[in-house]
Amino acid sequence: MSQLNIQKLHLKFSEDITPEGPVTPRAYTLTHSDSTGEMYLTISPRHDKHQISGWYTRLMRDEVLAEWQSEDKPELHVHCHVSGGIVFGSARWRDSILRRHLPLVLETFRYGDRALFEAFPELNRASVKVHFHATQERYDRIEDWGKPGDYCIY
Image (cartoon, rainbow, N blue to C red; front, side, top):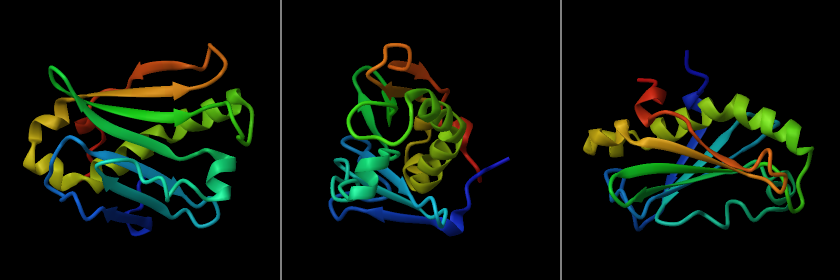
């Protein structure tokens, strides 16, 4: 069952990219409001630094960034900030929260960029690699989280 409330998703494409492509360079910047549950997804060739530059976002570091990478075959690389720098909460606590919300994040990327997946259906079978960034070795790792098609809600 989907966790995504599409009424609370605010989607923005930068002016130098279209919903249908290109696949690379293509990056996702996802932030949210803890108080309202609103989610803000920007799709552009590079991560939206303006979207993550506010004091609250820099303190919480709960944004999720992703981008398509393609050498032999396309892969979606997702980046989560677990610890280091100025962050709120312990690495253990943040790791737990990120893991609990990651299916929602992946649903958001898949739904928000659904026109790209319609234009390039093979992307549904690409690997999703999640990078958990942490100063503590036990939390700093890369994991396989399936395929984008696993997170399709329509």
